[in-house]
Figure (tube, rainbow, N blue to C red):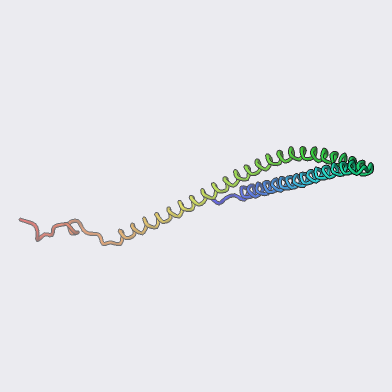
Length: 167
């Protein structure tokens, strides 16, 4: 019996679901990398702002010092916001990893069912083929026995002829 269409359809659906969950996970991981890069950029901006403040103090420039402080505050606000987004994204990624793990497990279970059904189908086909060969051989052997001339009793090989008898 071949694998049913519904079982193959289930397997295909499970594959698609796994692919979709993997794509969602990959997209979230990509977003995380982007946000982490933005956070590193904000940290670099904060360091540059701190240098600007220090240069303003050394140069005695109030405008440079104030610009540096404002830029530092801006980069700290950005870092804070990015940190919150990254935390939320980590939670989302953990949930997506779990979904992907479940979908992968479901796909493997469906794959196992399809493989078992195919193996059972191959075994049934082999059993049917062997039964056909057995029938053919049995009929062939039986037909040969039926074609051989039948020996009357006492005249076949191993039977003694009348001249060999002692009287």
